[in-house]
Each structure stands twice: as structure tokens, then as C-alpha cells.
Amino acid sequence: MQPAFPALPVVDYLQCQYRPDLQVLVGRWLRQPTDEELRAGYFRLLEQAEAVGARLWLIDTRRRDNATKQSTPWMMEHFMPLLPQRLHGPVFLAYLFMPTHLYEIEQDQTVPPLTYFDGRAYHVQRFTEEHTAMEWLRVCRTREADGPAPALL
Image 1 (cartoon, rainbow, N blue to C red):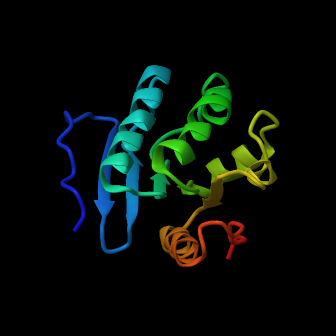
Image 2 (cartoon, rainbow, N blue to C red):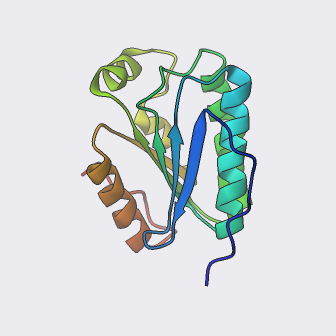
């Protein structure tokens, strides 16, 4: 049985939900957060993930713009490296974007390409459709934890 989901104060910029049937933590950004809210929101997701042991995350960014130039380095250098040690194993993050937003990210030289995550204990994939993202997470769940992250489906 999964531990109880801790009650955190409601915020107007992020919705968190754990799906025990899929073993996926879902974080939906409800609006464009400030840099402070973005960091607090990701730590909120991490606290929720620790409470239930969730190493599969779906992060829906379709209601917000791209992260700021300051938050991308923070995510890559500080936040993401915490995930495998705090969650005791590899972590898989499926990001959902609007198609135009994904195009902008892929053209932005300050955003690392997906190959940046090769060989790391945290894996990222980008999607524009939720069912495709959930399928990637399902494949991640069924693979051995020490194997490589599956390629984009």
C-alpha cells in the first residue's frame, strides 16, 4: 500500500497528483510561475515524490511559457541531480509542451539537447501529446532500473 499523500497548502500555479495505478506523479503548471514559484513548485513535486516513492513524473507545462534563462541552469545543475539520490534510483521526467513551445525550446541554444541526459540517473523526454508521454513512462517503469532510458517512441 502506498503511503498517504501529504497535505500541502494549495497554490494557484501548480497542481500535483499521484496516480498509484500508473506509479506516476503528475505536475501541472496552471500558469506562468515566477522564478521563486518555479523553484518552490519543483521542490513541492520532489516532496510529493518522496512521500510516495514516485520516480516517474509527468510535467505538464502547456499553460506556461518557457522557463527563464536563470531557471534552466538551476534545473540542470542543482535540481535534477538531487532527484536520483533523494528518490533512491533513476528518475524519468516526461515533459508536455504545446507544439510551438516545444519548437522554441528545441531552437533555444540555452536549453540542453536531450543527449545531455545520456548516462545520467535522471532522464528527460519531451512530448506534445499526453498519451505518448504516459506510454514512454510506462516503458520506463517496465525496464530494469539500471538499463538505459528508452528512446522516444
